[in-house]
Length: 194
Image (cartoon, rainbow, N blue to C red; front, side, top):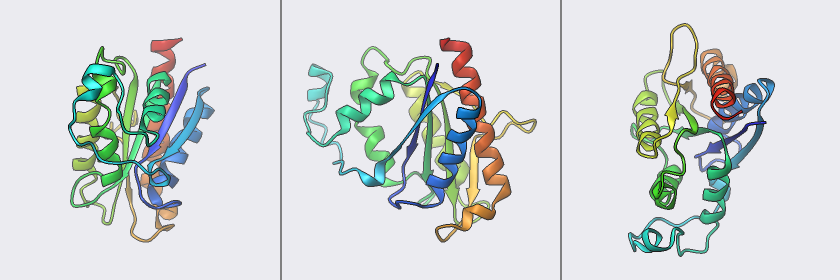
């Protein structure tokens, strides 16, 4: 059975991004995947200080749980990465994970893993696609396989519109694109890895 991990890159514990990532994971589970969510806002992770030790050892020398998280990501077959949109880009929490993922780039440990993005902006055109682009670039640099939501309109991924926590629950478009993304990641992960 394929394993899909949902990474919630929001500082909010139960925010709009978490809601959409969980919807995508439910859809992936319905498609036959084993799923797990990881909430970066619940972790105490430090930013990268460019010491380059990971290039020599394959692990980050900081003892803050990032190496455990990178191991989980490496073991997964698919990744659903979600972020709120801050000034047209991903959250600081997600950017820290991206920067500290260098150990996974040696020998391209994410090669052929299926990945997709979910973002939530404060307006319908609130930077969701630019933040998704940042996530897609991250996945490309790791040689992962990027998918959109797989709908007839082929969106970039899940795109939500919400302000206050809980607003996302009425965004049918955001929910639908996120569910479609979860299903697509599960289906393609099964084709590649089973």
